Image 1: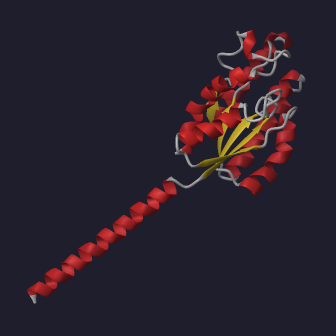
Image 2 (image 1 turned 90 degrees about the vertical axis):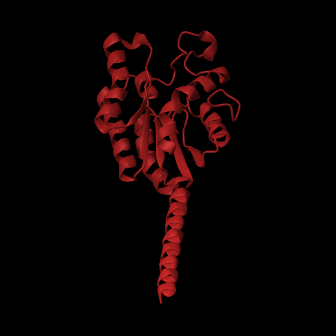
Image 3 (image 1 turned 135 degrees about the horizontal axis):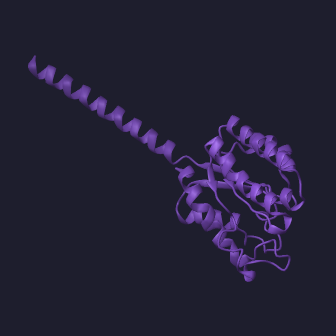
Length: 215
């Protein structure tokens, strides 16, 4: 009789161990589940003036693979895109790709065209809200504009991104061009679009803020 009780206790213990192992395996699979990263940007992210595959978004795909991070990158960037254009496209992109992460790199063209700060802010807020509704984490990419647009407008534009990031508790790349603006060799002749040489630096500016979102 005692032998049967002991045998039953061992069976119960074995079943418990198997159940725990199964739960741990499920957790491991969930952790390593593939993520989709959607990049919504303008010409800076659309490889303007560069050979195909030379842009920072393409380099991001290679870095993910090198780090054995199971993630797919969808680059929905378009040259000339404004926050208004991005806002009009984002809903369909979220529905189609169902990303876990949205990298939002827009606003530069708004600034260069002198569009109102109010419209830029409203569009960025709307895109952030859409992404949150779709349960996508947002990485907001900060941009700045040349000082010839006026000190007040330039200051307010640069401050828009940290303001939105703080209010919405978002990850923020403070400035995508950090480390570039004082080096003419890092820009194409238009002095707006970075060269191929600059793309790795841009990715290095993004990576520390993106990596935690990939866990």
